[in-house]
Length: 219
Image 1 (cartoon, rainbow, N blue to C red):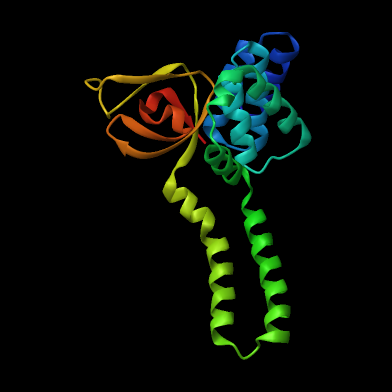
Image 2: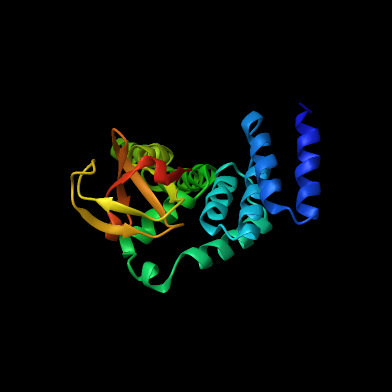
């Protein structure tokens, strides 16, 4: 078996030759031995070329999570989202859903930067007006601590996933429960509680319920 670099060269040749399915299989072999945002980006792009927009979105979202935030990733992801999200699906998103998804998409450094801005601004305000006010300093410290802790709180609330295939959402965590809604392929969700082979969708609220874990790609 060749080295990882040999395999990488081979998938690029396969893509150039128009053998997209072969390129995907070869690049998945690379991913078994190493993981990076670049690999996820290339996989996402290949899946888009093959017409599998749900898998394309999944790997492009993973590329962002890995910190590979170049323009091409964002452009391809916008295209993938447009392919999998119908107007009807977008209308199901509540204001709360949009706010939650927006927070999950922020990189960790954004929270650290915001906390630093609050700390510096608060320091000048408190130093000039309330430098001897213990409650004021405690309030400022608590606010900064909460901002820094917020990503951990979001992780407790749930994790992001993409529906790799169309599936049904049930009212409970097994096949004996009635179906509540069908989830479209490529939809991004936030899931929480795990129960056996099922996981509970928290957002979007319109699709809340229980879905089989194997139907999802976890980010």
